[in-house]
Length: 80
Image 1 (spheres, rainbow, N blue to C red):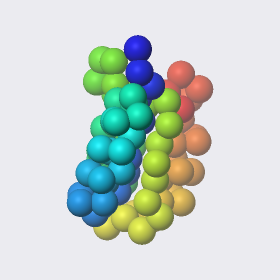
Image 2: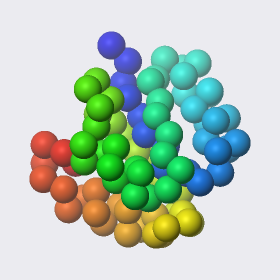
Image 3: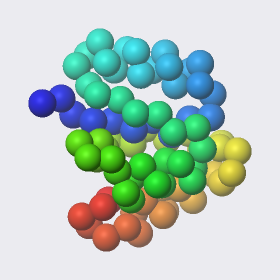
Image 4: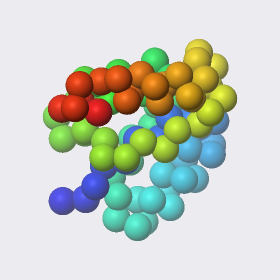
């Protein structure tokens, strides 16, 4: 089974290029276009979609990436 990665990036073109490269390397990749969507995918992932790594943009439209990182780190261990 491949490892699941989550890209939180508001530039969909850039996220698509990075996702394509990672998929060619054997990873499963999901994308969130803003911090709130990314946090949702980390805290309540769809079955089989729990990310093992998050690639995080620092300048997102709804909150900065550092805040997203703080919130991910504050999740209970089963979710973070």
